[in-house]
Length: 124
Image (cartoon, rainbow, N blue to C red; front, side, top):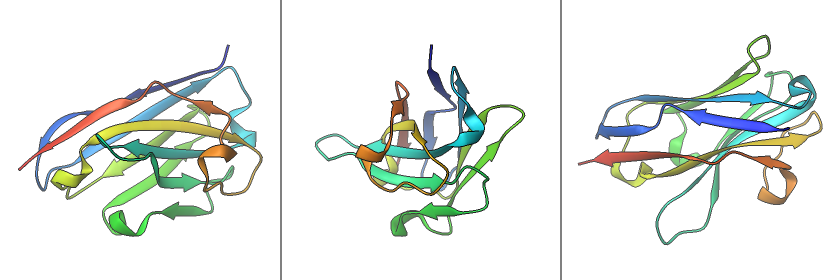
């Protein structure tokens, strides 16, 4: 059974930090690209960050560049999203995703597996 279990969400004040974790199981983690999407109330789901199979290539959306970092730990089958200097517009449900294949994946339809999401709330 494929599982992507997110953790680390919560309430933080503007300017604060959170680190999201996603524990993966039930598939060959090392052969999958990974990503983090978010969906804010009333908005479409958007890609926040993506990382290739090796961790050598990363992408972050322009609006979070310099503040968010994606990384992965192969022995732990875990992908992380470090979020610094959070802003109120960062309030959303954040989803961990996995895409079969080794290269970066930037579209929702590229991703095969999705987690249940973790809520991030940023108070002003």
